[in-house]
Picture 1: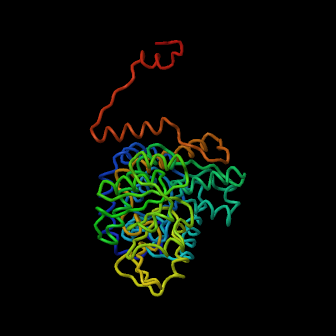
Picture 2 (picture 1 turned 30 degrees about the horizontal axis):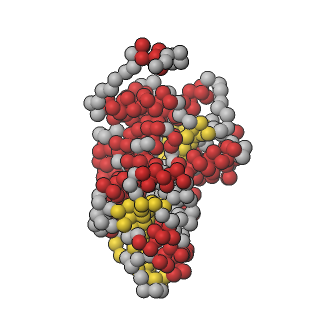
Picture 3 (picture 1 turned 180 degrees about the horizontal axis):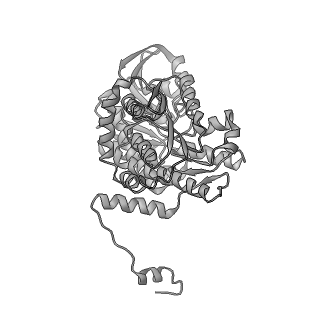
Length: 426
């Protein structure tokens, strides 16, 4: 289907009005991105650049897309997870002329079809959350890296990890900026965004009381830490499972119980995986779980909970409420899986709050701008994964503080001199 200048495929274009209201709400809570839009809408530094994006289609993502368009870019977009698209937001973007291919509930074949559709603009910039777009280019269109693509950005931990592995192998065909690794991204989006939105998804799908429950959080990285903090704040007894000794020690000193999943499986009421690794919960764990245990995932891919193993133990299955499937096991116990094992914070809720995505997406915008500026100078970055500049982190944080009415101190020239004076003693 066509809409103004854009081709699209969405669930229902009639949802556009509802989507516009959601986008307006997000815009009112994303002042950093609003400032960037205001700054660059006249000069249009991205004019002539084509951006293919593969990122959760939420109201916050729509604000980012509109900022790119106002800065002059041509944009083509798809969702980065089959269950994370807000159909009303997708409809609103399509109605505004954005080429978008996304709807809630697509299957795997449709998911990759959508990515292929975005590539028909022959992008020279890519934007990813999970690196499926980058992987598709490398697998199906390796010539694009030479003919068109000058660089890309990656939003999430799992994607950055895999891209660094590609770069180390010499397999990465164009430079990528690791937006995820920005301090103003993973110390806020991953911690506070994931923590709040994950429990929001659990509550929407179950409406259970969290206070007093044994909540098992697999992984104590930034995301797992955020989930554990929020669960603790709601009165839950939090148990952490980990493979990294330092992470397990941090969890212990934060007051959480730490144990192996083999042991946690026997006592947990709610299980939340946040590792980015497959087979965190497998057959032996399902077998010993309590009657009525609730299992969900907040990692990017749906492989952390081995649903194939669960199916082998299952007598019957039914949808008990939205985003909540009841598995009746052959041993008579019931286990509830939320959001089909996909990101519960996006599939069963709305994803991270606008206030934290404001900083993450400001980093996305500025990183895409950086790639374009390098290109305009006739240069090209090496084919590896880059961190964002430290000054960009501080700039974004300073603007965010200012929009919250917060002022902070600055070092005096004498203090700066003292910090660098290695001859100063006691």
